[in-house]
Every structure is written in structure tokens, then in C-alpha cells.
Amino acid sequence: MAEITLRNLRHSYLADPRAEADWALKTLNVDWRDGGAYALLGPSGCGKTTLLNIISGLLRPSQGQVLFDGREVTGLPPDQRHIAQVFQFPVVYDTMSVYDNLAFPLRNRGAAEADVDARVREIAGMLDLTATLDRRASGLTADGKQKISLGRGLVRPDVNVIMFDEPLTVIDPHLKWQLRSKLKELHQRVGITMIYVTHDQTEALTFADQVVVMNEGEVVQIGEPVDLFERPRHTFVGHFIGSPGMNVLPCEIRDGKAVFDGISVETNNAGRFGGGAARLEIGVRPEFVAFAEDGVPVRVSRVSDAGRYRIVDTAHGETSIKVVVGEAGEIPAGHAFLQFDPAHTQVYADGWIVE
Ligand SMILES: Nc1ncnc2c1ncn2[C@@H]1O[C@H](COP(=O)(O)OP(=O)(O)OP(=O)(O)O)[C@@H](O)[C@H]1O
Image (cartoon, rainbow, N blue to C red; front, side, top):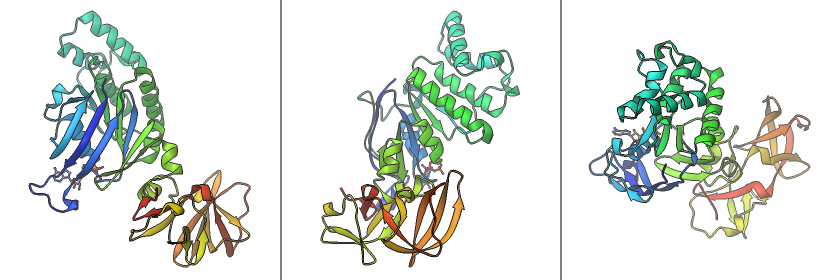
């Protein structure tokens, strides 16, 4: 097991990068704590695979260092990094039995058969594969095969980190949550550092203790799921996480107060704005917006039922503002006023939270 440190990491696939956009990864500094459960979350093309390949050693970064437990491994090939990877498509030997698949990495390292047997049975037990040990791997369903891929990583005694790259892609929707809970349970049991790459916020938030959110080659926030929800550091995080995402309203700052279309809005950080930004915005999640007697005037346009709550679409001029209303809450028709909870309303300057 190991702590992984990425120091001033930058990567470009171009020979002579000049513009910011030429970098697939822009200066990353991340510490992955030993034994942590991390998700790497971001939209397609944001650099997740590039980062995974740098950690596993398949790709050498243009700049910066990768350290395992403080030791530099930037130039080491994958086989010397002791990383197990679980990909979108299960990697199993179809003609071998489940048992032999799990035993393979240990036999490959010359382990004694008695040790192999004990370890294979232990891991099969954890993954609910015991009953299938004698079956050919080809006969298993996709989730069974994915468990084998994971098991082949877990049996190895020398693994520093297990990296999952969109591991539930080929799993039937109704089995996804089962496998997801299994992964979480396994992490708690074995305590190996795990990095789970996905573009799906539900997968990321349910698996990880810490979520690393990436956008356009940058880490925009690292935090617990609750931090990402309650205090998104960037409007991108506000949009990307949460359903529906955070409301973003253009504003200006006057005398230390946020002002939206001439209406003063209480926030928790406008007083800290030091000037100098090209674009100022108020961010507030629909869960922290409520109908009131006065406040921001809006027109109610649509109500969607989301089960235990309703999502109300409203608009003030060109700016749309969503409101989440609980089962018992009243929803006015036509014209209404909105109030924002000041503790959860913040100002963003050029996308970044004002701190
Ligand atoms: N081999 C390559 N050569 C040139 N550019 C590449 C290469 N691989 C990735 N890129 C570019 O680097 C950027 C990051 O891509 P990357 O595959 O790391 O993103 P991603 O977040 O993993 O996306 P996805 O979820 O679609 O796999 C993208 O702009 C992509 O076009």
C-alpha cells in the first residue's frame, strides 16, 4: 500500500505546447492518502485517462513528478509500480476456471501452492465467488467476470493501489448498485488505496470518501461528497454535481453586497471580494432556494415530479432559477418571489468561489 503524490504534474500530447489548451493536464498537485477511497470524476476529455496512465506508468508526464510513499517513480515502468487495474471490460482468461484465474498472479510470482490456495479462497469468499471457483470463467455473467478482474488485483500481496476505470460500464443496470456496494465494502475491509474513475456522479459519490473533480485538464475541487454539494469551489462543480445542478446568476458587487439585476442578495462571501474579476456570479443550489412573500421576482414555468420532491423551473428575465420543493411545500402559480439561504449562497469570480 502506498501514498501517492503528484507534484507539479503537467502533460501535453504535443511536442511543443504553447497555449493553455495544448495541455491535456494543467499543473496538478494531488496527494492520494494511503488507504483512501477516491473517485476521479469529470466529463469526457477532461484528462482522467491521461492521469491514470501517468500514475500506472503507461505514460511519462511532460513535467512534474509521481511519488509513491515519497519515493520518485516517474520513470518506472508499470510492472515495477505494483498497481492493479480494473478496466471497463473484464480482463479474464475465459478458458481457465475461476480458481485458476484468481491463482494466476500468485503462481506467476512463484508462490507456494498452499499459500495460493489459502489466498484464492479468502478473496473468492470476499467476492462471493466461492461457489463458482471450479467453473470456467467464460460461463460467468459480466459482473461475475468483473469480480474476477478485481479478485486478480486483490490476491496480490504487493499491490500499492487498485485503479478502476469506469468498471460498471458493461454491468446490467440492476446489478450495478450491488457491485458498487461490494466495492465499497471491500475497500473498508482491505484498506488498500483505491482510485475509481468515472463520469457518473452517483458512482463517484457513493464509492468515495474523497472525490477529485476534474475539468479541462484541471483539478477543480478535492473534497468529501458533502463539500462538493454544500460548497462547490467552482461553478463547474456546482453544475456537474447535484441533480439539478446549482443555479448561477450574473451579479455585481456594490458596497460588499451581491446585486442581481438591481436586487441585493445576501451571500456568505461577497464581503471578501477583492476586485479584479471579469465575470461575477451568484451560485445557489435549488435545495437552498424557497418561495417567499418577497425577494427575487420570478415567473413559474414548470413543475417536475422527482419522487420525494418537486423541481420547479422559474425565470427572472433571461435567467432561469430552479427550486426544489418538498412533498408538503406549496408551489405558487404564475408570478412569485424567491429567497436564497444566505449560508448556502456564494459569489464566484471568473468561475472560482470568492475566498
Ligand atoms: N494519445 C493521445 N494523443 C493526443 N491527444 C490525446 C491522446 N489521448 C488523449 N488525448 C487528448 O487529451 C485530452 C484528455 O483526454 P483523456 O482521454 O485523458 O480524457 P478522459 O477524461 O479520460 O476522457 P474519456 O472519459 O472520454 O475517456 C483530450 O483532449 C484528448 O483529446
